[in-house]
Image (cartoon, rainbow, N blue to C red; front, side):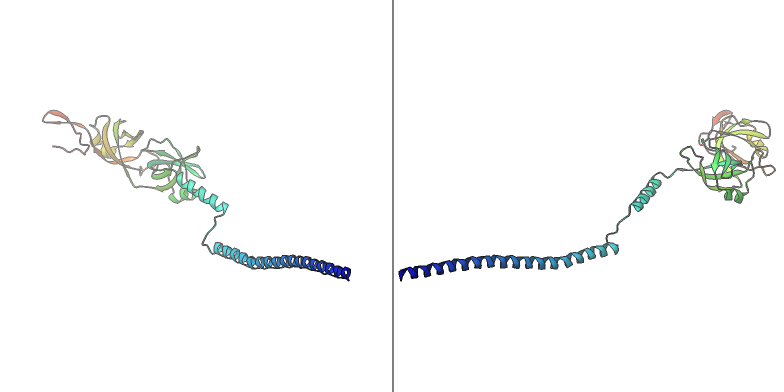
Length: 251
């Protein structure tokens, strides 16, 4: 009888151990399943949110709140800024039109500037517009050339007459005299003002008004008026010099 009771106890203990093991295994499996299910749900919830944020970012960019400049636009802006920084200087001068050099340029003999430019870029339409004659006096604005090119005329006028300050160099004869205007020697017809010039000393400062020769534009321009700014003269028998640089008058 004691042997049978001992065997029954052993079976009961063995069954209890097996049950505990099975319970642990089942708990581990159930825990793994539950954690995997929760992680999947979190991923599904976060994915629509990310999509919505991306959509909002694209909408903000397309609406112009944060404009993006393309590389070509940036290059264009940089080129424009460089052009503005390198804008050529513009000068104004008077000269005598000599004729067309080619279809896109003309020749002008400058009268009152130290520049030695002679050929200027000028549009053919403008050449025809002004109907210029060789020898005609013109007033021009031009850009300082770069890279060995000719200066470009930006504006041109044909004045009735011009007035320049310079020096009286001397008489060529009774009808012509030589003047110096900013390093340029110019011979002008002085018939109308010969009485004012005949007594002048060389290198006298003067202001000369002259125009294109109406009889022949290719001939020497004609002086219409002259003002003397410095001259030797006598007051009470003593020689004096006017230093005020103003037109003289008789005492």
